[in-house]
Amino acid sequence: MHRPRSFPALAGALVLILAACAVVVTATASAAGDPTRAARLSVAPDRAGASTASEQAEYVGQDTCLTCHEDMTKGLDSTPHGRAADPRTPAAARGCESCHGPGGRHIEDPAAAGTVRKFARISAAEASEACLSCHNRGSHALWEGSAHDARNVSCVTCHSVHEPKSAKAQLKTASQVETCASCHQTQSMKLKRSAHMPVREGKMECSSCHNPHGSTNVKNLRVGNYVNESCVSCHTEKRGPFLFEHAAGRESCVSCHDPHGSSNDRMLVAKLPMLCQRCHIHTRHPGTIYDQAAVTAKSNRIVGRSCVNCHQQIHGTNHPSGATFVR
Image 1 (cartoon, rainbow, N blue to C red):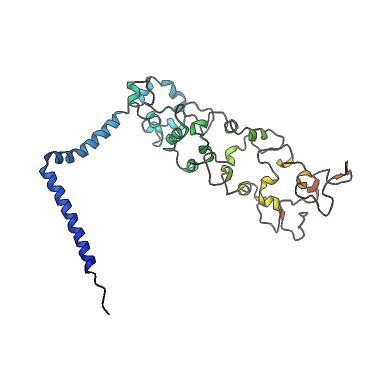
Image 2: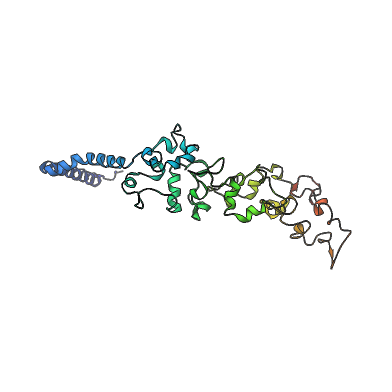
């Protein structure tokens, strides 16, 4: 058995190697014969160093900024951004210029536009880009492409670096609920209804369930991939799995409940028995409390907890006799 000859392949490789060597020799000889070109090659690193020095010269230092903008430090010094002892903060780096950029050109002509970064005058994307140079981990990692980012909401829409009003997170309002309510007015008004989560008492806030900086699931939820996983992170007794599942609850908790608040008991989206009658129109017993135009006074579904008087385990049950959620 004869092996295939590899001479053509070896010859081709040798030709390529010889050609590469010829190019190197030619370039070296050219540089040696041309003193001007050799000089340009030798000073290239020095030019790079000069460019870096020029960029460094554009930074004037925070003390120079404070000669005019001294009032900007009143609210900044007491915030995390003003802690010079923390090496991760702007105060430990270039101070004002860490966020606003080099101030050299601004010093030369304060009235000129575009010499420093003014967050009130730049686009939402540019403002967020400056903040993300530091705040790009943890809960902020998914900001780019998030629901708020896609709607031209920037970091400075909710947060204030120099004049924060809240005790934490440097918000422009006194509380997180007030900040969210500036846009999400429908949800904020639901919190004022009679049945509500303990948001008004300060035991919860919007970020207890939502991550305003973005998430990988629906509605910017902090936990899980859909609504139920978020709800059962607290309401674990409703998690299941159950031997007998309630289809409406398994599909979504918000089929029956409004998580932002309701005028009905237990934050239901409608009063009983009307809520149940949205699905259970015809059952083994009359599905409604009405008899033509009159109300059936003897119906046990117009007192107490209505349908839940009997069907108590409405979220599901493991009892062998609990197919109708009565036990």
